Image 1: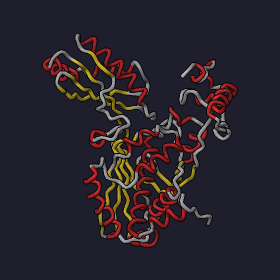
Image 2: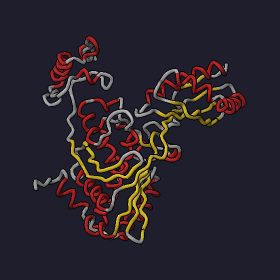
Image 3: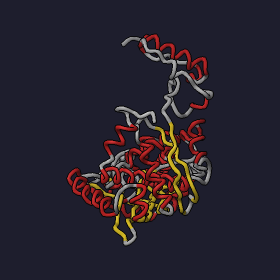
Image 4: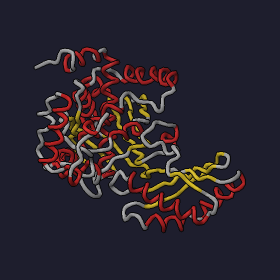
Length: 392
C-alpha cells in the first residue's frame, strides 16, 4: 500500500456536495465501479455530519409499510402504520397479515416496564481485600456519583449501580435513563466522569470504561435478566373466529407450533425464545434511523402463546429494546419521515415508539407461526419472495 491508495483527505472532512462527489469519483476510478445510484441524494450531505465519515452517497433500501395495527398502550394509542426497510420479499406481507389479524381481534395492549441503559466499567485493585472494600464502598456513594454524572449531560441520569467482584477486579454496572435518545455516547461520557471521580477517591485504583458485562450489541443472559434500554411487552387475545378467518389455523394448531419449537430453542442454547424478532427489528430500525447493531440485544426476547377458552392469548416481551426518537440517525430526512408516519419523531416519543415496535413484532410472530401451522410458509415465499416474485 502506498500513499495513493489512501482515501483523499478534504477540508471540513468532506461533507460538502462537491467534496463528496470528488471522493466518490476517486473510488470509481480506483475500483472501476459505477456509483451513479449511490451518488443520487435527495438531501444536503452536510446533514450526514456526525452520522458517517468519508461519505460517498447513500444506500437506497426499499421501504414498505405494514398495518394497520391497533395499539392500546400506556404511550401509544390508536391505529398505526409501520414503515419497514428490507430486501426480503414476503416479510412485510407477513407482518401486515399479523397486524391486521390483531387489529380485527380488538388490538394489542402494550406497556413499557422499565427504561434504563447500562454501561459497566472495570476497576482494578492490588488485591482481593481492596477490591472487596471498594465493592462495598461504591453503592454507599451513589448520590455523589449522580452529581458528577449530571455535570456531563442534561438528558441522562444515573439511576443506580451494582458491583460484581472477580478476584481483584470489580465490574461496576451503572444504570442510566437517557430520555428519548438511545444514549450510549451520552452515558459513556457520564460514566467516564464518574470513574475518574472514583479513581481520585480510591488511590491505587485504575479503570477501563468497558468490561463487556453490559453486553452492548451482544446477545447474553445479562440483557435477558437485567435489561438494556426499554423493557416492553405486548399482548392480545386472538379469538377463534379471527384465527380461522384471517390466519387459517385453530388455536390448538398455532399453540402446537409454539410449543414444539421450545425443544429446538433449548437444544440450540438460544438467548430468548421467538420466531423472528430480528426480521422486524432490522427493517424498522433501518427505516427509522436506529442503531441497527442493537438488534442483537433487542432480539433477545420471549414470545408466549397460551390456550384460552375463546382462542389464544399471544404476547411478546423484549427486555433490551434500545430505540430513539431524537439524535443519531433519527434526524436524517427519510428516517425522520418514517418516524413521522407513526407520530414518533421528537421529544417525548421514545416510549410510544417502543410500544408500536413491540406490537408490530407480535404481528410478525403470529403470522409466521400461522404460516408454518397451515403449510403456507413455503408457498408465501415463492409467491412474494425473491425466487419468483408475483406481479399480481
